[in-house]
Image (cartoon, rainbow over all chains, first blue to last red):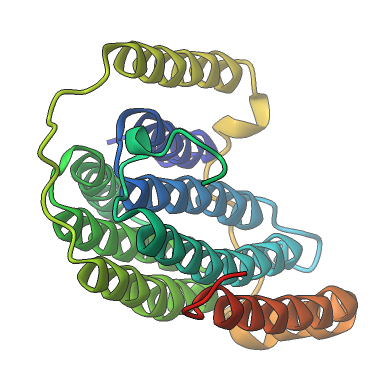
Length: 108
Length: 167
């Protein structure tokens, strides 16, 4: 097998991102759509960590700014999941459904 | 990271991702997502980002997925009955995803920095947590505290949203 390069990681990240995007387009269950969004966020994290590791500075260390950015992304994503799931629960209480096709009016 | 491990974890991660998208049952989707996140954490560890790998397991595979499973069980979701995908969404999703991957391949081919092999680290032992902490508290102190306020606002928002009576 050939040696690993940055392109391998970027390709894996891109494939994971496109999987998540296809899921957001295809699925009709709002919770599954939310999970596919998480998949896309994690794909971005993978490319950031790969860039961090492949950018070794003069001091011989990986670039830690990228890892701090990943840390922030994970924190904000956790907050986003909490709020998003609360919105879904409120929606389910009002309409008894999580199918996006059944949710066609903005106001009720 | 040895190429064998990279390919194993990458293929496993993508297989779990496919299973998230294609599974009809939301619980099965959520459990596949846990598997995908664990494989991603293994890739992070292979990239010498130990702290991020641990955070990935604790926060994503732990806290976030438990939240997902709680909500799925709270709402008592059944497997999707309407199996048929919307043909427009199927064509659109496949076309945009395919176009994205094709464009990515095109860009990576003309990206000279992308074909470099793993650079060697200049240190013998990488004390990863200390270095991330230095960067976080020295260079990114203000964003860090702002994120703390964001988490506080989010938790208050969740309490407000999940009250019985929404006005």
